[in-house]
Each structure stands twice: as C-alpha cells, then as structure tokens.
Image 1 (tube, helix red, strand yellow):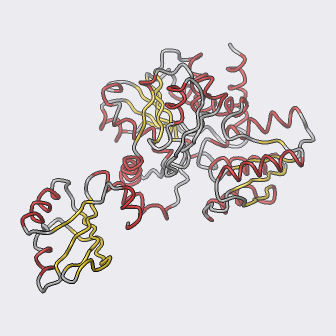
Image 2 (cartoon, rainbow, N blue to C red):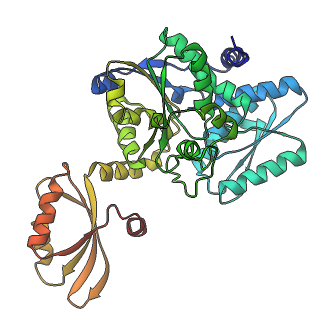
Length: 415
C-alpha cells in the first residue's frame, strides 16, 4: 500500500468526525435512460453541499498537527471552498479569514457566514477573483497565516481522494467507469490516484465546461496554461488554469478521455434532475451526469459512478437556467423583426404562429424608418420543428427578420 493510499484512507476516517459518508445511490431513471447501471456519488449532500469540505478538513488537520499554535487560516473563494473552510474553521475552533470578490452574491456570503459563525471573518475585496486572491495571499503573509488552496495542494488532493475511498467501499466492487467533473483538478487528481491503486481497471472520464477547458488545454500544451477567456456560468468548475500538482497526476490522461460540455446543455440536465428526480445540482454538480449523453456507447451495460460534486444552486438563477435550456433544445428563439407600421401588420404576424407557439417577449427597440419599426420578439414552442413553419410564414409574408438566438454579442446586449 502506497503512502498516498494510507493517507487518503486516514483522511476518509477523519471525515466521520464531521459527517457520515455521502450516499452512493443507484439512479433508476438514468440507468434506464442510458442502458447502464448508473450510481451517483452524492457530494451535494455533504454538510456544505459539496466535496470541498473534505480537502479543507484534511489540509487544516495536517497544518494543525504540524503547527498546533497555528490559529489563522486564509482562503480566497466565492463559493464552495469558502463554505468548506468556514465549516472546518468552526469545527477546529480556529480563525478563518475568507476573502471574497465584492461581486459575490449575498446568498453565498450569508451561507458562508452561517457555516463559520464567530470563527470566521469575511473580507470583500476586488471586482475580479485574481484581485481577491492577491489580497488574500498578501494578508496571509502579513499575519503568518496558513493559506488553504482550493485544489493545488497535496493535502487537499488527499482529502478529495476520500470520495473514491467511500464509493468503492459502498459499491462493494470496482466500478467499470467513473465520470468526474474537472475544475482546478483537486477532486479528479485525488480520485485518479486512489483508483489507480485500488481499481486500476476502472475507466475514468473527465468532464469540463466548454467555456473552461483547463485540463484539455494543459494536455495539448504539455503543461498548465492559462486560458485567455473563461465562461463563469459553471462557477464551480470554470477555472482558467489547472493546478500544477493536480496536473502532475493527470498529465498522462488520454485526450479522448476528456470531454467538454456546452454550458447551455448542462442546463437541460439541471432541470431534468430537478423535475424528474427532485435532485438540486449546481452547474458543476451536473457536469458528470450531463456527460452521459456523450458516453452512451462507452457506458452501455456497465457499472458507472458519476460524482455529483455540488448542490449549491441559487434558485434566483433558475430563470436563466430554464432560458438557456430552452435555447439549447431549440424551443425558444429571439428574432429582430422589421414590422411595417400599418394597421393589421401585427395581426398578420400573429397569424403565422401555430397553436403551440407563444410570445415570451415583445419589445419595440426603435423606429428605424417612418414606415417600419424594429421589434425584439422572443418565441417559445414545444417542438423545435415548429420554428420551420414560423420561418416559412415570415418569408412568405415578406417580413424582414434576423434570428439572433445564437449571436452571442447581439443576444447578450438585447436579451
């Protein structure tokens, strides 16, 4: 048994002081849908609704064992890592100073405060995370604190490996396939190392949001590289640069084992899990489940474990998630329509719509000429092919229009 395996199992036992093992649940809905034996490792059911508590606990425990009088721990995070550090700071009775961007939603700030209570101090600094991180590291150096990295730390990686230790024990055998979400790489590195020793025949697929493919970029480059642009919608996994220590574990990953998932498609899975299963997942937590759509051939007839990494979903985001899901499924489109300024013109347009077509938005943007007005129209329907009939009707009626649904620049500005 390697030193890493011993430490990961010790870490897994330490978790029991804070919470029982998160459930490993067979999902009948997904199993039937994909023709496989699919299990969900429910990290969304940890005390802080994500796996981040594991790495924070192991890293803080190791630091205190080495330096018992260490009384200040510092981190920079706008999400799950902050909540994990807060919870563990309260558990050990040490001071946790948590730096968050000024733009952090109040809901996340309050949840972090609830988990940490009097043991933590929250400092809101910086409009962007890089500024927040710099401030946290400067403060940590100034006060002689211990900085808790969200992923690029060997103790954090050991802690996250406890997910695999629990899952293998709960399943009672090695799964055929494990599907992992990837952000900075702490979870995937820990599980990869653990399974590499106890279940070397288990196949692992790594899933990233399309707007934050830091692992794929590092594999292509031959080392960690900073992405020029990141889509922050999948905030739990949208990382511009994978960790150096985590990539050292993942550097030999075959490129075809890494999959990128469109952000809008993830929204369809969030809604499906919520409406069908009653399971609340954040975007990063839905990554591994959504990836099953691309892995149908690989997983057929096999035992598959998907790690649902987090469930810290702010329901104020639900309208946006529904919107993105509808657009991805082709059930909602936005048009810029040049509508004649004459009696009956609107009626002519409305007659083009079918019985299952609804106007979700209708807004005059400006008058572009004396006899015409520019109108933003949002249309919802129940089948994508209904739009074919709408476009045929618009063309036949002589209406000038532009479909701006997939034009990110225009859509972001007017929608």
